[in-house]
Image 1 (spheres, one colour):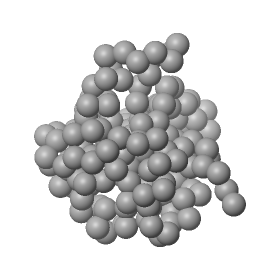
Image 2: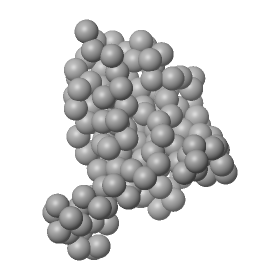
Image 3: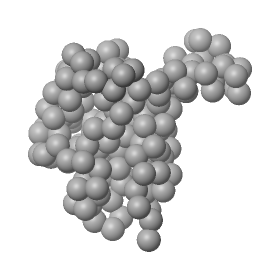
Image 4: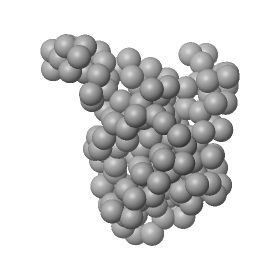
Length: 155
């Protein structure tokens, strides 16, 4: 599949297609799902990062179950906005995942998304580190996806 910008990605979607938000970490991958109107992102799940083929199989099953038509994958740009080794690795992973799932993908700046989510979970929800471990990745995926959704033009 192709690497697209968000506008071109949404142009490929049918009316009721959802978007999958993906926060790829080194150990876990957070997933979030948009509603069919693509207004709201909801945390979906956290998956252990393993072999790419297994991840692709899992995402294809989610796509069938939830009507997912594309992916928004977080890319860890450097704080100054530059494209470093971590960003290149995330881009390569996203492209390979897109090829294996047949889902188009766009990359979205995820700088500080996990930090913002952790700060919210500590300050607002008063969750311990152990409790945050289970939800921070999927909440970061929702944070990334929501930022992308919020940037879409509305009629």
